Length: 347
Image (cartoon, rainbow, N blue to C red; front, side, top):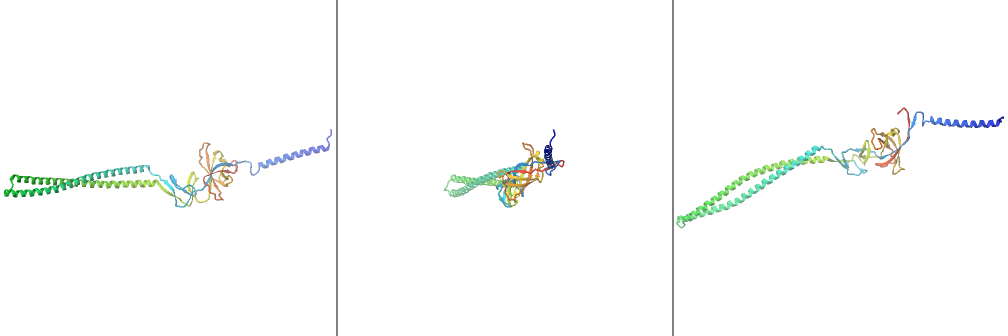
């Protein structure tokens, strides 16, 4: 059977169309293989979407030991304003020694005060006795004077024969008794005076010891007071701005944010470290306001990993463009890092 020329023509046309289609497909595959976005020897890293926080950049950090703030976070403050107190580091041994010295000095002062009280009580008692004996001596002196007068009167009567010798002798005895009584009182007063002199000497010594103990206790109290004053000292704002807490460096810190610069922080898994690099562009969206977005750039990758239940992670730090001068502190966000092409063999 002989094929007609028209049939051969149709078959040749069909073959030509098929070959043209195959050629275009092969050319498209070749172009994709050698395109600038994916050259031979390169890997395209996918983008990352990480959770984190965004907050202000501290321009004037506050370094303190156990800082206790008396001003609320995010308050506007002026340089020199007292914003809290700091617990100072004090040697506990020195503090314990100062407290012990205070207790010992206080005990010595109480003992000295008690000694002064006892001596003064004894002195007051002896002086009271002397006062009583002085009054008795006055009365005894008057009695002696009366006895002397009566003795002289009876002596005259005896010489005149108007009084018996017996009655005269009675006046002699009365006069002798009055003289003995006053002599005894005067001896007692003398002895009591001697006791008074001794007690006054003891009182002076006790008061001197009390003064020394008081000086010692006062000095110990001042030392302890100074040490306690050092335990807490006021902390003042180092600059004008807002008092904020921001995660900077290796951890959160207190400080003053005086401009609108923002930083963002996120954690990346160790397995995803190959997908990030310094200078990488990023886009940030706030969790509570997805429409609020910020452009950012990766400026630091943590050197040391942070252990978590899901494995080690590394801290990423981003500088955020804050064109609207938004005030954000510790706000949850998600950062999306744009993918990039990594050349194999150059890592």
